[in-house]
Length: 161
Image (cartoon, rainbow, N blue to C red; front, side):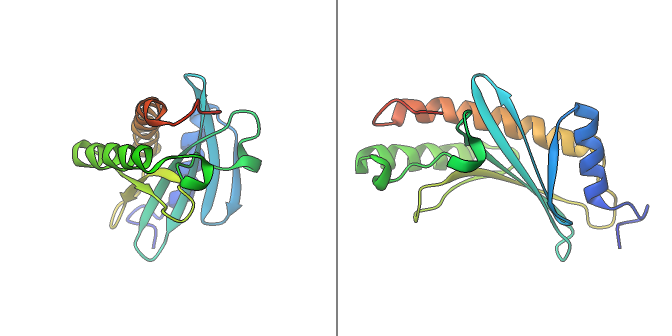
């Protein structure tokens, strides 16, 4: 069930986060919320276990540093003052990054404008190691911070993140 070693993938996630000294919360048996502040921004990371697909999904969002959970993720949407031209630049940037990215994919929800990076870590017939999880976290945080810097240039106003 958990691969050849019988280890629960979420136990490996907890071990990886503990090794980092990060705080985290279990949202359920299948999901963990954590995050990190870096380069003047806060990155929220939700790690979700899809048992059926034998995959961990890591979802990265830039969130406001002052009240990250209450205000939600970074969004680019007309209802938040983004012009059609600025939104087109955002979509073009995300498409460009998706073409070149090694691990993960960028997405933007057209309903509310939420922008996030999602990385899948399949484990199939093996166990997930804390090292693999930490590699996904490191690459995801670096990618999110790089793209957010580019998004600031596309914004129709100064971003309050």
